[in-house]
Image 1 (cartoon, rainbow, N blue to C red):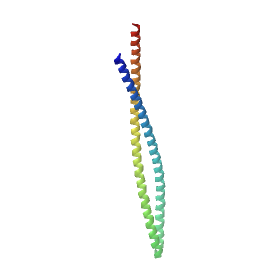
Image 2 (image 1 turned 180 degrees about the horizontal axis):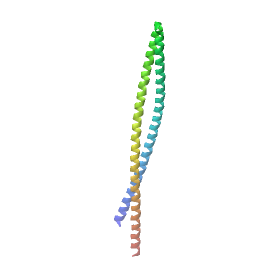
Image 3 (image 1 turned 135 degrees about the horizontal axis):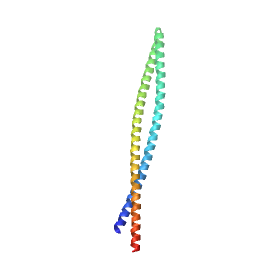
Length: 161
């Protein structure tokens, strides 16, 4: 009788532990889903920024081309040519800076993509673990019900004696 009580107490403890573990894992899954959402928003933001930078690069490239043509036409006027050369150099530096920013943004986007994939795999693993814990919990609940029924039957038999 004491062993049955001890076994029941042990099963209750295990069921409580399994329940708390399920709650913990659910909280962890929720946290990871929130992190994943934040990363997706960051990806969207970086994609927009990437698009803006690409447009700016195209504009700057067009400006560079236009100013090069203007420099060729204005080669007869030395001072104007020097001014245009300086402006062209500034535009090329801006274009290089914009190009550098674009590459950095693309790198960040790729890194974020990798992180998002990593978090998705992590979420899948946690969901699998949660499912396993839920299955184990259901099995333990069934075992608990079976043991309780046996105990009740046993108690009834003892009472009938």
